[in-house]
Image (cartoon, rainbow, N blue to C red; front, side, top):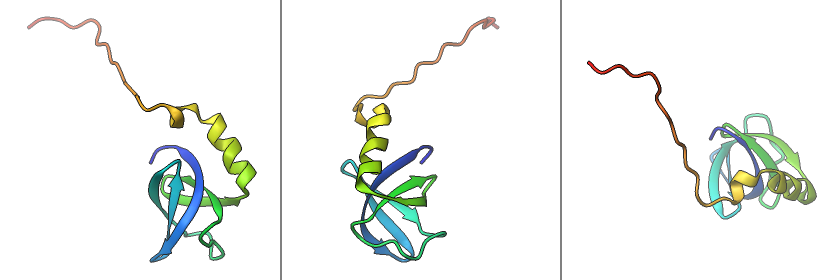
Length: 85
């Protein structure tokens, strides 16, 4: 995971949270928290829960992250100045 996302904790398993981020389940380590429970909302960055937030903050984060709402993501690369061998 290379970006910060917010979601709802579904389950705690082996010191990790299973977090629902718009229907996608991700696993996040709970290195900095002991008081996270199913039903809590959290922010996850690089697979680690960074903060516990409320439902309103989670919804605001989702609205700001328009890339989450896109089902198509395409990267295009151009290579310039290639010399033929």
